[in-house]
Length: 227
Image (tube, rainbow, N blue to C red):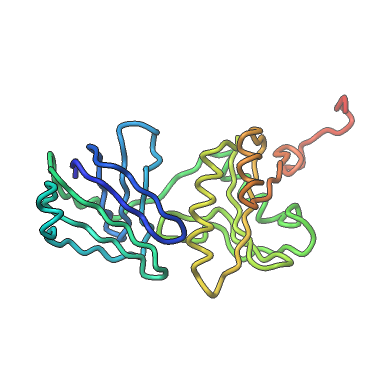
């Protein structure tokens, strides 16, 4: 839906989006995302599944302010609530996308995942593999492992940037809601990690690990290195 709306989020933090024209996405898995015409793929605000959405009529005060519809989206495993006040709808459509085949990763990234699963000790002493491609409602976590202090979720990239840290942050938010897994720590692993991504990851308590792809494949020639 494309609509003029305002948004209020309450829960772990409070956030507000004033009245403006936005794209509202309601997914079949229960997730709700609010986008603007900018900022690439990242939504301005969202509610991760599982969640419940209730559509209601505005009260008298809201109606006088031009509100025509009220969406209340409530998380099922927390007290988080997303409240969307819709003033004007410009486009509203529904589409069945069917079953998605999933993300097909390029050779290097998929090989990194396989090699790290086989060499899980590169994460540090006391780590053991649980599974690759651990499913979540928003996509699979590359590697789920067991560490000395609990479970560990690993996101793998060839080149680690801020988008990868944000992706891992969303996975951690979901995984830590599962009482059978929590607490879950995050590890951001890549062949190269940009300074901004490392700063953001460490600020969020996510550990960064740089991987040497050639060394992991056993084709690294240490004698030809300058240092």
